[in-house]
Length: 139
Image (cartoon, rainbow, N blue to C red; front, side):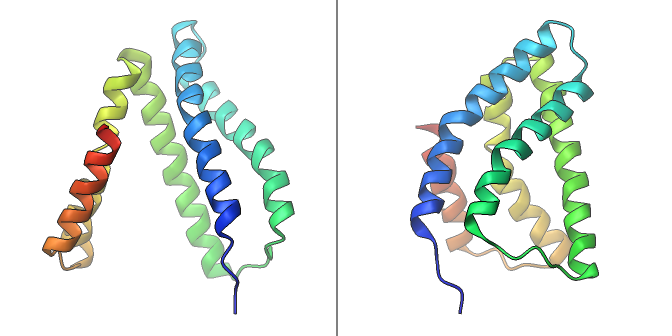
């Protein structure tokens, strides 16, 4: 049975909350100085990979995955690259705060897509969870 690692999770989330805004502002400044969006996106992933590699090694997680899982990981990576490219393109032409405010509606979009594509049941608890999360992000 796998043991939960709550403390490392808390530390990683706090680090993310402290560093993510700096990453977005750095991307905005780079775009304003004429650096291509593709290059900014690539740099974000290289830096994130370099910062996360020691953490992954420290956690000692197994590296072996099945070909099916590897395919899903690859697909997820493609979508992550596309979404990051789109976000950096957005903050290149609009304020970072406005772009992040738009991103705050993501849980609602995922809830609707899950309902339409996967036929997930959308009940009052899921809607309330999205609303609470949205309200928490806005504070």
